[in-house]
Amino acid sequence: MILNHKIHVLTRKEELDTIRAPGKVAIVLDVLFATSTIATALAHGATDVVPALDEISARHAAKFAPPGSFVLAGELYAETLPGFAPPTPLALAAHGVTGKRLIYSTTNGTVALRASAEADDVYAAALVNGRAVVEHVLAAHPGKTILVVCSGSMGNFNLEDFYGAGYLVDLLAARLGEQADFSDAARAARALFRSADPVPRLADCRVGRMMIERGLRHELEFAAQLSTLEVVPRRDGERLVRA
Image: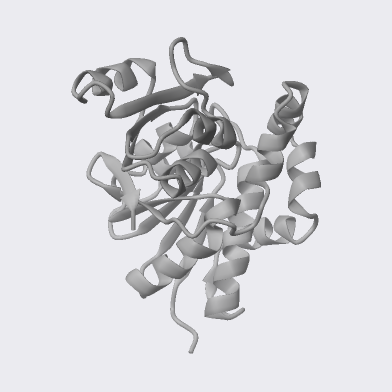
């Protein structure tokens, strides 16, 4: 059966200002690395994730958490914030998050999650958990319009999030049928996804090249894996929890 979904891709978080989010489901992507890290942290036993707008907001949230109950992690302009745990998936998992709240601040991804708050439901997706998120959204929200929100990079389009959006669209098309209502941006994202394998595509984008130069190719290769995690991060008030 083909469901009457409407699937849209927003190429950067700032486009949320141009659409009506209430009544819709938002799936937010920041492949390198915020949403990849959030999914990984929850998969490694973090109790929940508080996405912060910035360092000040993150430190403020930490004041209200009992000592030893949380991990404060994040970056600004790709530099780990002073006194914060590393923001990338593997490094943060190695640091340890099991049984703790993750208070997390990034330049783009956590900002995009906060900016999506007007949507009825908000999820964090990446290449590593794309299938799990798509399957959950289709089961939990039949008939609702889906906004796939690329975080972008400081107001600019970025390739890795658009590629990740294309993966989600490809998964949605497999479930809903080719005649489902996909926007032109959604179709373009899917075409990009189908044009190259994940590792070379991510390694060739601006952020990917920067991460490789910083010795983080292993983090990029981890984030480029398709649907290796079953975790579905879902908004619950001011935090993200496993659906």
